[in-house]
Image (tube, rainbow, N blue to C red):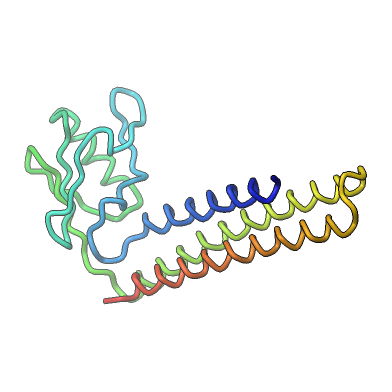
Length: 182
């Protein structure tokens, strides 16, 4: 029971890490680059995906076509002030963003960012492991588990933790390879 709960929580941490990886630029246009962008629309922060269709007409361009043309200026402003470093081009109907090729220095910065996201995910996994082991030790003290059962449970939780840490490492190396590929 506890191991299933731990595994589910760890899987969620890995998925969150992967979503973070998807927001990192790799030199190619990708609609997930704008996933976290919110636009102040009628006084409320609204995700860009709710306001417009985002597409990639080619490998170096993102096209944003708002459902409401009145929001065009707001979307353009949100992109300009975001930390993405993009300059939007507004033609009155569609906003186009040219994705410039990454410099070597910028690629290294993005690799560091990916490493940071991976480390945050690993910390999350370790916290889940710690909480589970504390529960097991508490159950052992209460007499629900024998010492051997407790040790077996702790070992299985450690194996699950190792499995997900390895998965994060694999995802990180894949992302770094993708970032560094020119």
